[in-house]
Length: 478
Image 1 (tube, helix red, strand yellow):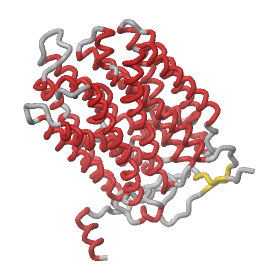
Image 2 (tube, rainbow, N blue to C red):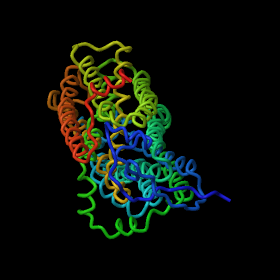
Image 3 (spheres, one colour):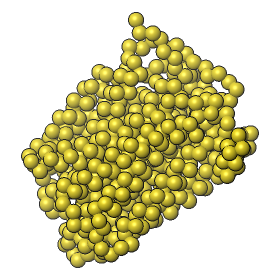
Image 4 (cartoon, rainbow, N blue to C red):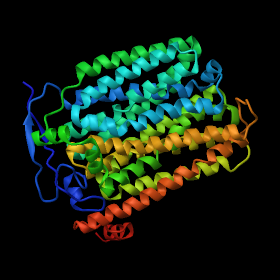
């Protein structure tokens, strides 16, 4: 007989956050949505037929395939230009539309997650993406292809936030930051699948076979999710009733009200967009046409980005778990490193050595998992019955910045190049990528502003956050 497992009730007690010593007493969760300082967590016993590991593995597999669906067009950019006769702006619209649908559905998907649970959303999302890839395999004109990308974005919207919700429900709070990062790591391997496997099949068998095979894989994942994901452990009845009857606008307002949740949004906005802009669309054309690299070398660089993200993810998760008081510093450090490598790449007017491109790929790749620190802010500043909505709101951040970046790069390329151009010189790429400074500055300002407000709220609640220099001084003195 499967032993009963303990599940944290959704009773919310405001606890400590960044900078508090009490947060360490609760596995680094601060403030924790399920426990407060000096108080034992209330738990309820539930019998389940699934182990947490099995549930997580199914959710992680669904997320991996979702990332493949999301990024497959990035390695097919040149083929898409030829198949549909696209300009730079036209190609950008494929990704912008997909990401726009994804971002627009984050909060509705989070609300649906609070009401219906992760199993329903992962199964439905996987099925919708499979249909989208099947439609893309058959598409021979732009409107049909755009419709396919809409379906892929819509199906993708709920997968990751549902996986995060399952982790928060099935694992102890002290393990959640690491498990979220490991899930992100698994998802990042989908980038490798796109850069290596999808690219190989595309060049060997063509467009229709490639995207038809992705549709078949998506259908298989739908079946696995429907049969392999257990119903979530029952939360407190009051939480279920509240989630069911609470009006949408009120629920969203309550979920995004804490300054810590908005800090999570800006953290997620700031750190992943460089990675996404390069990996999802513009990386291969830039490396091949502007840097003079072969398609194989471009694939190596994309794979390096993904390997960097996979390596950094568990390290970021461990740091977040052990030092919740300094989560925002991880975000700002990553942002500073990203700015430095972009400047190093774009200021010279000549193609860069391959070794420098590898360093660039490593640094911006590491920024991807740092974005998940924003998800951890949502978890620790939000009550359990609104966790899906808050996570969806935070997850919108990175995709808003990514949409802005992808579209801006395409628009600038087209503005500075001759009419009808489908390849662009290095100078055009330098100008186009320079516009990424705008979302970078906006993100840094957003993080600093809402960190100050979150810390002010904590101080008012009796949990002051010491400045970093004071914390370091105390540590040296101890």
